[in-house]
Image 1 (cartoon, rainbow, N blue to C red):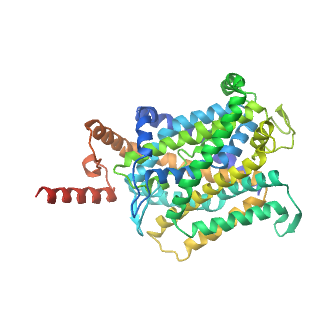
Image 2 (tube, helix red, strand yellow):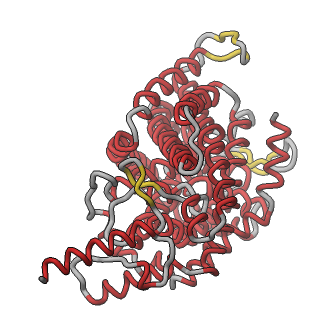
Image 3 (spheres, helix red, strand yellow):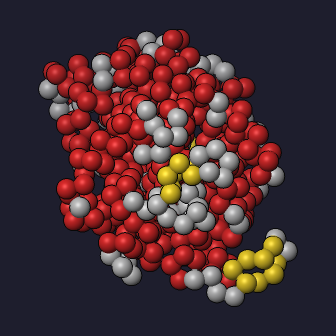
Length: 503
């Protein structure tokens, strides 16, 4: 199984996908005139405004749901893996992916808002919806939807729960070893997996509102606590920061592990962490209640900054300042060996050791606690994304019991990931991320050359902002955007109301 997964990753994560991720981000940055810089103040303003409705969640709740998908094990274990296999220079390429990816996140999330629908009393949308409506390729949209259900329902949850299991075992010990049908497992991992699955079941049977209410409280609190701990470690070693930044920049272009490894691991873990272009963030973006589609696009662009420039950088600086990392070379060789060779790079141990070295007795339990919340909320986001794509398929073909099958599958995948080895879990996760990224990025580039809806929406929003309007409106027909049925209906209703008030 491991050999097959590695083979698939070799094909999916070829240099072509890495260039595609960076190229799409650069392309949309130029086309939007670097919206991620120009509109930074507007992003912050929009983040704190907006309200929920009966059908949709607020901009902040949508940000929290998408952040729950972005801020996960990739920020703790993923950063460790990037450094462990690509050297310190990989961190620089994670920053590049975040900066350019913010423009990609704007484009895909704005598209999700433009082409969203109201289904069963709540807003639904995402790549499958805009690939069908804007690209006119229903077959392509179906491939994305099925790939996403498999990725988010089966492949990716195991990566998150695996890190929870590993962190719990590192923090509290393995306990007794128990022989089971799926191998010899530690008591700690079995208990951790069981607890995670029980809480997961309680929340996912409560629907998107319960997910949004849970994540809007947990995600900001845990992200802030994590950044504060990292900030304390950085401040205690502030004299080392210039040297660390120099090391990151130096290794980015002449890295120890070869420039290809630094770029490859930096981009792979950057995309895994902040998800820009992957197509996961747009699902939550579509659920938001906003006056104009561009507003949620801007909020989602800001979430990429929070994920990578704040949380991932916090992890990287802790690891590099304390020196609690190794850099793997070819075969079993190490280019840098600061700690024991049996410490896995594909896990949270680098980060746990970093905090432990400065705050003895705190590192392992704190990371176990942080990983539980970060990774658990990410699993919730995966469930919501998979559920949305099932809802998309059900528009055409009604398949009884598919929703229940998803709930059982994601709970099973979560438990399996918590108790099995890290390499297989990460490998399957990379297959899922890579497939979604290929399909989504190619799609949003084709959509741009066909109709430019995300760019037209941005120009319209900026024109209204310049005019100083008090309430934004969006009329896709006036902008020449087709198949945006939700917004067409809303614009006509608003026009009818205005005419009655005038009369």
